[in-house]
Image 1 (tube, one colour):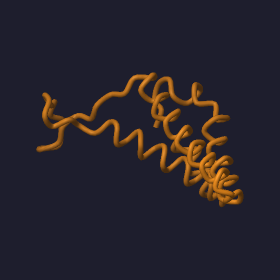
Image 2 (cartoon, rainbow, N blue to C red):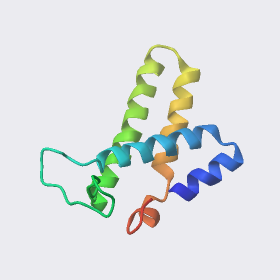
Image 3 (cartoon, rainbow, N blue to C red):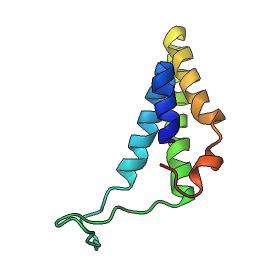
Image 4 (tube, rainbow, N blue to C red):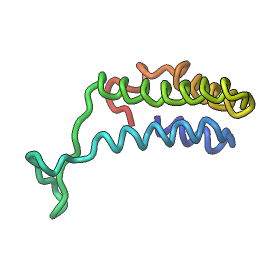
Amino acid sequence: MQDELTAAIKAGDGPRVDVLRTTLAAISNAEAVDLAGPTTPVDVPGDVERRRLSDDDITAIIAGERDELSSTAQHLHRLGQTSRARELDARAAILGDYPWGDYLWGDYL
């Protein structure tokens, strides 16, 4: 997914860059450590291992990002803001059409 982001940046594909950055950030946030629970130290003093997400976790995050874009687009369509709604529809389509399974199972970032 990081490679896809790099390619989108080089291609100047702003909408794809935005969607991939947002999705990668959502995944990264979900991996954040719950400091209330047990932690596993790593090689760097004071640092702990991040949560490992399952394939289902990652798929749910991506679906959530897509659904949020779609929902906002639908709302904007109802308000008559069709130009912005179409932009969000296109961004949602990036997540809907992306071959996530090929990139997620294993090293997804």
